[in-house]
Image (cartoon, rainbow, N blue to C red):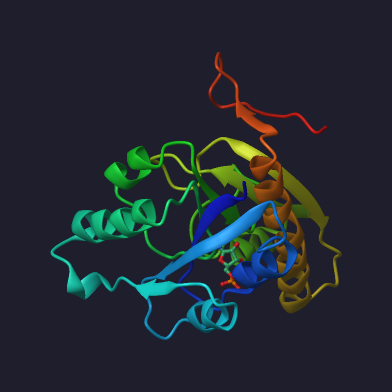
Length: 205
Ligand code: GRF
């Protein structure tokens, strides 16, 4: 049985596209829902092109974040979603949503956590002048980009590299690493250590 996945995205959705192209409908993973907070998000078009049901949950349509997240959660649960993937979702999730999908939400972050959490991680790393940055895929907990790390890949920054080239490389790596993490989860190869819940064990067959 394929793992039923939902993707939450606010922007261009290139990570959603990578998931659709690399995993969707090939047996292991089925993207069954795409949710966005932005009515014009390109991610919604990508979902429609792939025949995946997509819905918009605008902040203004709900009393508060809690109510909006409850509506998203109801929709996802109703669609039998087993894994929620944040792919450029620019909203904080309520504690109750995180609890509802405990250890079943993953996020892709464009830096090597715990360095440069939060917004504009690529710019933060570039301006800091680090020589190595990268991409992290992690489980989502109640903090901002603090959850247990599933996969990371490093990228070296050459002295002369303009930020645009660095950004491009980060996105290329994201488009490999996020589908890889989802594939491992779908195969049942990813486990949170029972004694130390910060540690994620990967058991590749
Ligand atoms: C990615 O860089 C991701 O790491 C960050 O937001 C960006 C989303 O890009 N959280 P896209 O919408 O998938 O193209």
